[in-house]
Length: 171
Image 1 (cartoon, rainbow, N blue to C red):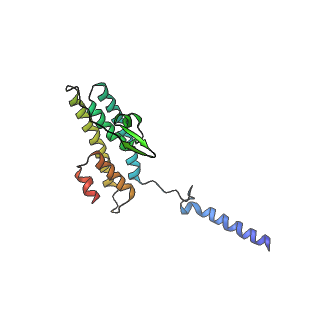
Image 2 (cartoon, rainbow, N blue to C red):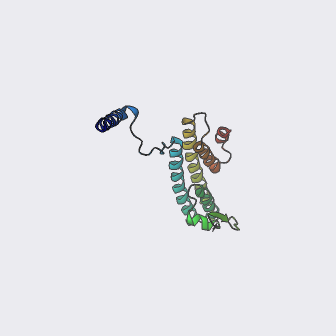
Image 3 (cartoon, rainbow, N blue to C red):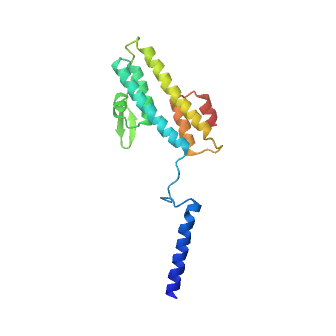
């Protein structure tokens, strides 16, 4: 009798294993879910923007565009919250797990000749980021509100507060 039970159990397991390809396979981790496309785009676009903002902040620092540098750092912190130089320059300090901004006075740009170059670059970076995010939001719109979608919209509004499309999508 015991031998029959073992054989039946083995047959059942074999049938299940044979059927798995038809059912889509075994998930590596049952708790793991596929990352939504909007989240992938949000992270990649945010990393790309952060790198570009860091480079533009360096350009501003080298060319005495101090307000431009700090503007880059303020945007950068949305995507790299622990960016050391940005936190220091903008007078942030740790308070437990939180960042608290101390007394900060915005500096002035000291190089009028280079300011148009900075303005052109920051507009270009913001436009590329916004275009990428809006296109992804439109492409992945299911009509349902999701945490990933809300976070992507919040990022867009943080970068460009008056963006009409993002505000309209937010509802």
